[in-house]
Image 1: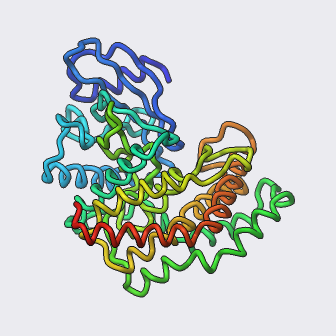
Image 2 (image 1 turned 180 degrees about the vertical axis):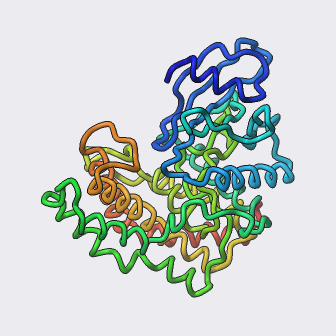
Length: 370
């Protein structure tokens, strides 16, 4: 990105001090993200993001959701000063984003100094703190009416919708890639009915709609220098949803001993200690709002979310790699295979996962921890 163009965009925002350094930042697949360092050490640094407008087509609705959630969290005592919530930087026109001459959309946050994120968890403490962070986030939003939040990406975790998208990509096969994909397609079809369990529970009214994060990778929790939970970030996918979505997606990245796109499938193993620690932190913070069906749905979500991600990666690969950033021609296929291998491993430990969740839930209800 041209520095002069970045500086022209920065000039639209209420920035204190003077930006002296620009660096690409983070490991996200969707937006272009930059860290702006301040020349004046007593003034804040900033995060500048170019919003992926091809995915988030309704930027007004997207930013409404983020503003609404941040405002609600601030009512709960969260603040930019204590660095336990994100803080948007307004434009000089008082808006939360700006559109440049090319039609691209940009937003800015305060950079949270002294925080760090992990793509892979290193110990039980980090896992537990991640669980506490996401659990507290959902609990803090439990009294915000979901009708105030736009469904910014309709059917985001709707498994039937994702399977329909895959079927459509298979039928079109625009890149002529199907000939090598029989094992992956057979894997998806063999599990399709079981993976509809949470949707069926929701359709039956057993699972209440809540405001959920919907992208609870572990690196979307920032920890402080003591590895204590500091802030939940990446609020783009906040929507009405089921609590199981957030639990399962977090477990997907926490329990896996390998990277999300690991080529060597033998390296994909389960760290049950990290799973137990995360579940303990999550249920500790959500125990007062969870009903019994929601607790029951948590174990199934551990299978569903890596399955959904595998389906999405596979669909994007068949379709020509339009959604996710890729770093090699077969990157999305590599990601899909890794997620499906994770599902296999989780299926082998499913009974242990169920029993662990039930034990933790009973423990927190008995002790009244919050």
